[in-house]
Length: 474
Image (cartoon, rainbow, N blue to C red; front, side, top):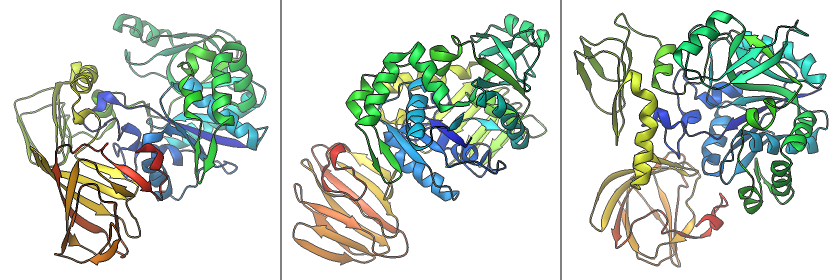
């Protein structure tokens, strides 16, 4: 029975703001290694010889970033299923199961969130291999993390008092995140595990359980898949069908209701990196208990998480504090209040500020752009275009643009004209004129773009042609 990783990459990680943003979420960040969390997840099961290509489920907004990160580690996905909107983990897994059953009626799925850390990959692989017999027999296997502290930020799984079968206990109950007194009682009892959110099961078994418990979700997902289409590595589900799908988690939809749930205890250095203290807990610390990343001077500072990306960060006489410096935002928080960072994100979103959504550098399939300056009726950006890449053929209703080449060679389309621009040369794109920017060279193309007009929002783009199939989005 073939084993397919199903990697769910739908979360935003708002409690890791300002590093994690809505359009550049936690799975795409390098937090604990030279690879991103997504890349670490994709490589986690490489020791398994008969592992099949992975199915990824992600928000449509992140598709190019995810595809590029997967390609960087030499992986080819079975497919990348694109959700127009998040509907939690149960619909996401149902989409993956429906896709796999069309390909392989005997598919087995190892379901992994893309934003977790597992330091001891070999121990995790051993647990997965141990659970395969139970999954083949029709059990829904989950992996319970053996707790080493009374953690209040995780849900728990209690196993029943019976014997194990193939190393797996029957699940006694799932319990929500406890208060500290309850968590201490769970830790002392020895039969409770942290709920990892990682599962192993047959695709047909999952679909059967969902049909029994949430037929409305199955119907919506089936309609979305049947009306969808494969586009290179991407599978584009039907947006209207999926937007009608109810939201629910794997635990609530099935695991807490089924009679076939079993749990395998695992000790593998797991963390869901849900907030800054969790990251502090797993990162190397200095003799004062500080995690320091970037240009940081910490004087008389203890047990802190200090990260500087763009300038010198200095602290004096502080304990148990988090300071995160990025190009456009600085977070200062007490470590014991770090869960409340999500309230800052909610405030930014309510105020319609860009800092909750994007970094100053914004990535696109053709490269990236970075805001340099902005004022009344103007803004300045630096564009970096990858070799061989091109922007869409587009126009703007409300702004004109000036382009200055600072590195490389540009191929410019402006109306009926097509011409090259070299370093220190410039051109003007009038308002309402069709235009395109391409990089025909072998080095990155760097452009300074000065925009002027009455409205400078990114939604003032009308696309006519696009090699990345974004015409319908404009």
